[in-house]
Length: 377
Image (cartoon, rainbow, N blue to C red):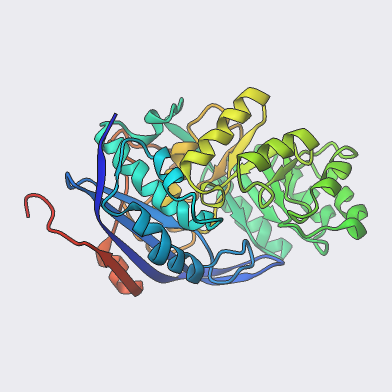
């Protein structure tokens, strides 16, 4: 048991260019806007969080602008100067604010970081992790087949265990089958981001013979019944992403069999506390999980990696090195994948902090609440 009284907090709005545009059928991302959170309790313990909403509402209805407003106007006032004994209590405190899961997740994470530091345990051990070395996968958004082959070859040489490819109704399943056959030691996922509909089921079914480990979110999150109907006719399992925003959604997926695998993104479900409830369901119902990425910075990646240590995680998640998307990460130490493995820290907490010197280079604006000198300064 720990006593945590949040006495100050900082929020940073940053914009960082990607090394290369990341393009799907929904959006092309050239710069990553994000909100970074830092909270401090009465003992001077620092906790960090990251809001993974995007600039525009192409992935979910939340955006950087709406999340900033939600945190500034409604969520942070529910946290500041309050006392908690466990991070789960924060979810109850924020329940008067509907939705805004990505905004809530950033605060939930910061409190979990403080809590695990006060419990003097690395976060992954505190939540019941069973492995320190996390197998890493990476996502590719390439349209040209020759470029795709080259990139996959580079990633295989670097030791990555899994490659996720973006697909749509215009992708070529024959080319993807050739790619899969060329790299028999790699797992291949295909992510549709809801690109298919009842009118393109015949195209989706062509991917059943490609040799994919899974197909991620083939239909819109509003088409779970259709997903269940088509899943029953295909041998390649569907992994639901945008359809899973809560524990209740995960239960519904399992009941309807609209998918067989859950893509767990803590930011999308409201943070680590809700994600752990989904993990428990997965253990009880034998539902495989894996961790999806959001083109995020090192704090979000560190929380994802801690979660990936849990026994319900059955496939390599999106854990690329810090320099895969960015020239420099805003967290320190930067995430490094060595021979396809990301090794978790044994230090108390989530294991990373925000690099304030770098943040200043990409800062758009910041908000500070009740700033006080840290102990010893």
